[in-house]
Amino acid sequence: MRAYDIIRKKRDGGELSQTEIEFMVQGYTSNEIPDYQMAAWAMAVFLRGMNARETADLTMAMVRSGDQVDLSGIAGIKVDKHSTGGVGDTTTLVLAPLVAAAGAPVAKMSGRGLGHTGGTLDKFESIPGFRVELNKEEFIRNVNTVGAAVVGQTGNLAPADKKLYALRDVTATVDSIPLIASSIMSKKIAAGADAIVLDVKTGSGAFMKTLEDSFALARAMVAIGQEVGRKTVAVITDMDQPLGRAIGNALEVKEAIETLRGGGPSDLRELCLTLGAHMVTLAGKAANPAAARARLEELLQNGQALAKFKEMVAAQGGDPRVIDQPELLPQAQKVIPLLAEQDGYVARIEAEELGIAATMLGAGRETKESKVDLAVGLVVNKKVGEAVAAGEPLVWLHVNEERRLAEVMAKVKAAFTISCQQPAPATLIYGEVV
Ligand code: URA
Ligand code: CA
Image 1 (cartoon, rainbow, N blue to C red):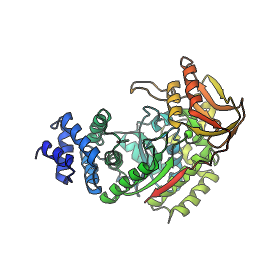
Image 2 (cartoon, helix red, strand yellow):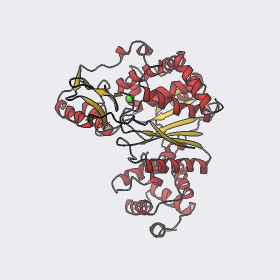
Image 3 (cartoon, rainbow, N blue to C red):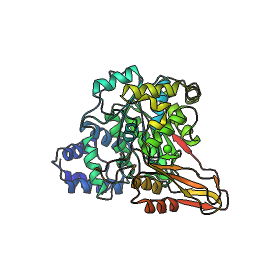
Image 4 (cartoon, rainbow, N blue to C red):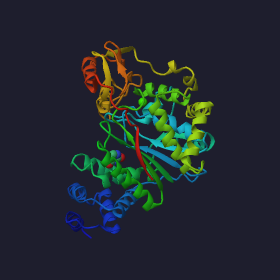
C-alpha cells in the first residue's frame, strides 16, 4: 500500500477502505508518512468529504493511535459532555456536580484555554488549592466516592489527532466536517466515554458560524457514535453572545456557584438543565429527558447540587469555603464599568470579540506559555434584548493590569450593537440530533 495511491483515490472522489484509512493514520503517527503527503490527503478529504463509515473508521484509527483510558473501575455508564467551544461557557462547572447529584458518574478530562475561549481546568484552578492533576487511582476513587472528578488529560490520547490537527491548522484544512467530527469524537472515545452529549455551538463566537454547518457537524458526530457503539446526542446551541454573564476564570466559578444555588443567569441554567437531562438519561438514571430535567431542577432547588460541588471541591484539595464566601476567590484590583453612550436595546454582542478582550486582560492565553490571571475578566451587564439607558454599564471589566486597558475598552465597546428597536428574543437552543 502506498500513501500516494490513497491520496489520489480520495482526490478523485473515491471511498477509502478501513485499511487505507488505518494505513494513513498509523503511518503519520509513526512518522513514516511525511507532513506533505498527509497535508495533501487532508486537502483531498476537505474537498471530497467522507461518508459516515469512512469518518467512523478515521475516528477509531485515531483512537487506536494512542492510549485509551480504562474507566472500568467506575460502576455505571460513563457519560461525557463536550462543547465545541464558546465564550464564557461555564457549563462544565455546573454540570459535573449537578449530574453527579442525580446519580450519574462524571469522570471528566478537560483542557486549558487557548485563544478566545477559556479552559475548564483554569476555571477550577481559581479555587484556592484545587488540584486538577490527580493520578489515575485518585481520579477513579473520587468518581466512585463523590460522584464526579475533573482532571487534566493524562496519557497519550489520540496522538494522531494532535499531529493532524496541528497540520490542518497551517494548511487551511481545519473547517472540514468529517475532520472536525472525527477529531472531537476520537478524543472523547479515547478518554473512556460510554456515551457522549455534545453541545455544538453556533454563531459569531463559535467554530461553526451558520446553523446549517452546525447541524451538519452535529449529524456527523452522532453518526460516528452510532457506527462505533457510543450513544451520542447533540444539542445545537447559541454562541452569538456569551453564555451567562461572566467571562473569566474566578468570575465564572462565582457564576457557577450562583447557578448551583438555584439562581444564576437564565441562559446558563437552561443550557445546563438541557444538557444535564440528556447526560442523566444516557447514564440510565432517568426514564427520559423530561423526567431527568425535573429531577435536576429539584437538585438545584433543594441545595443538593451545591452540596455536591462543595464535596467535589474538597475532594480535589480545594477550599470549600469559597462556596459560601466567594470573596475568597481571586479578586481583581479594579472593577471598571464600560458605559453605554446612547439609549436603546442591545441588538448584538460579538461573543468572540469579548472572548479576545477577556484574554487581553489576562483571563486566557495568547500563546501556550502565557500565564493566566485567574481574577480578571468581564461581566456582561446587558445582554441581547435588554434595554439600556445612556450612562448605564454595558460591561464590568475586572482588571489587574492596565497596560492594554484603552485597547480592551475599545474592543468591548465595538462588540455591542445598540439599536432603537427591541430585537426579537435571542434563541438559546436551536435543536437536537439524536
Ligand atoms: N476541535 C477539535 O477538537 N478538533 C477540530 O478539528 C476542531 C475543533
Ligand atoms: Ca459564563
